[in-house]
Length: 316
Ligand SMILES: Nc1ncnc2c1ncn2[C@@H]1O[C@H](COP(=O)(O)OP(=O)(O)OP(=O)(O)O)[C@@H](O)[C@H]1O
Image (cartoon, rainbow, N blue to C red; front, side, top):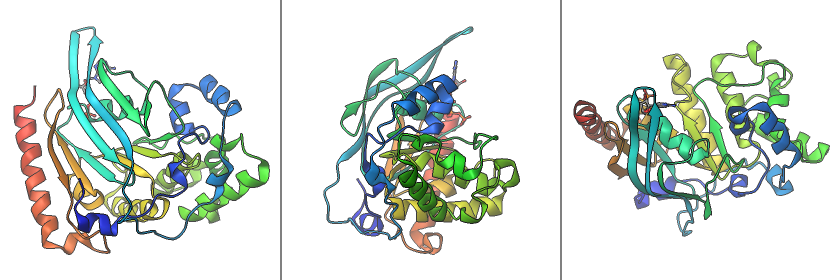
C-alpha cells in the first residue's frame, strides 16, 4: 500500500469514479465499430460526469475503495506454435486513486495484463473485479489509451473527445467536451483534425477521449513510447497533473524505469514470461513538483532497474 507521504500528495476522486458512465471510444474502437455504435446507443452517461474538476483535491484521510482486484489471474495464448504462457498467476489489489506503474522485460505479459483488465480478453484462469463488479468484457468504466493514439481521423478533436458521449444531451455533452479540452490544453485546436496535431497533442486528445465517459479506471499501455524524449517528458508532467485533477485510478504500462518511478505512487515489476509480480513498492517520493531531484528517486530507480534486469535474464 502507498506510504503516508505518497498518500499525502495524491489527488482526489473526481468525475472519473462513476462506474456506469457512458461508452469509451478507445475501448470500443478496439472491439470494432459495430460494437462502438451499439454501445453508444445504449450509453448510460451520467450527467454529473459533465463536471470536470480543475482543482487538485487531497484525499489522504479518506479510506479508499478497491478499484481493481485480480485473484489467481493467469493467461495463456494458443498459438500455431503451441501454448504460450503469457501471464500469472497474479493476485493484486489496487485502491481507488492510485497511480500504478508496471514495468517488466519485453514480452513478459504487460499488455496482456492490461487487456485482461480492460475486458478485451478473458483470462485463462482467475477472476478480475473492477469497482466490485466482475470484468466480463469492455466497459466505458475502464478507459484505454494505446501506444498509438487511434483517434478517428475523420473527426475533429472535439468530435473525437465527445464520441463516447452521444448519450448525453447536446448541451451537457458540449460542456463536458469543453472541460476536457481545457483540462488537456486542447481548446485552441478543438476544430482541428488529428493529422494537424503534434504527437503529444494527439496523445492528449486520446487521453481526453478516454476520460470523457468518466472512467473509474484509466488503462494506459505505453502511451508515450512513440514520442520524442522532450515531448515525452512534458507529457509525463501533464499526465501527472491530469491525474491530480481528475483523480481517476490509473494503471500505466511502461518500458521506462525512470518513467515508472516518476509517475507511479506505486510501482510494480513483473518477472519474465509468464509475468508475475516480483516487486510491489509504494513510492515514498513526495508527489510534489520535482521528485526527480529527491534522493529517494534515484534509490527506487536503481532498485527497480536491478529487479527488471534480473527478471529479463531469468524469464522464460
Ligand atoms: N494473440 C496472441 N497470440 C499468441 N501469443 C501472444 C498473443 N499476444 C501476445 N502473445 C505472447 O504473449 C507474451 C506476452 O505478450 P505481451 O504483449 O503481453 O507482452 P509485453 O510485456 O506487453 O511485451 P512488450 O513489452 O514487448 O510490449 C509474448 O510472448 C507474446 O508473444
